[in-house]
Length: 109
Image 1 (cartoon, rainbow, N blue to C red):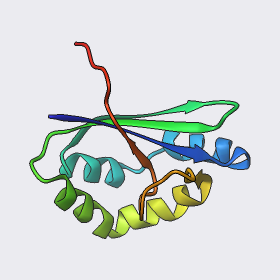
Image 2 (image 1 turned 135 degrees about the vertical axis):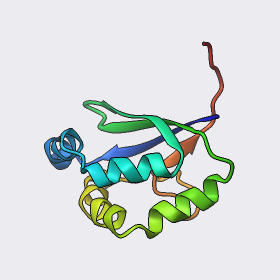
Image 3 (image 1 turned 90 degrees about the vertical axis):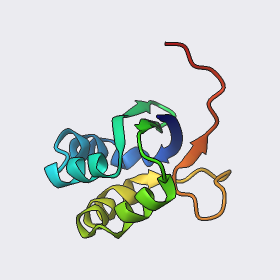
């Protein structure tokens, strides 16, 4: 299992919409997340800075393949068409990164 953290900005005028979308996440999206070997997925919001912190545990063996499978899913693409306009990628992102992946520097069970 691999713990993964990521961060992205949230547009101030989209906070309520983003919260509502995730309060009513589509069952097909939740199923796709699980099918791609992602468990214990949470998104946290820090206001007033409007930073989203995402965390999940990856239980597969090929994250790149599972991420590509998720990106190819038509329902996921429809979901992202709603959520992506709410988000504001950080200037420090790398290449084609949307959410900025974070380095784990500490963990305690």
